[in-house]
Image (cartoon, rainbow, N blue to C red):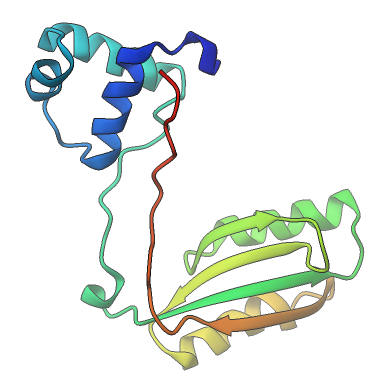
Amino acid sequence: MPAADLDKLDYEILRRLQDDSRTIAETIGAEVGLSAAAVQRRIKRLRHAGVISREVAVIDPPSVGVHMTFIVMVEMERERLEVLEAFRKQVLADSAVQQCYYVTGSADFILVVQCRDMGEFEAFTRRMFFDNGEVRHFTTSVAMDRVKVGLTVPLNGG
């Protein structure tokens, strides 16, 4: 759904759902001036159009024993389409990778990786980088503190 097809009420609904996806349609409707049924129809349309791609529980990593976050810059040996696609598939299949960006600059990819400890990260580097002959180089930074983590999209439209 193109952004032009979203109206002010769609943006208001999306803002509320980004903050808490469990907010009921009655509450959203009261806040934006729509009936609960109208809110539900709009949410259904936004889901169907792919504007709302997923609704998930956000888990606090330390609460489940995941204490380390790593930012990894990866440089591939060759920037051929099949090499990039194979790496993308490898990244998508690994649950330690929380985010992956194909970027410009000295690195080809930037990964955000979460592991329980340094031993788990070392195992990750072996399977992801050392066992992959197409990875030329990788550089890792260890996050000292989670200052801000979010998946909300700035919704300035509407």
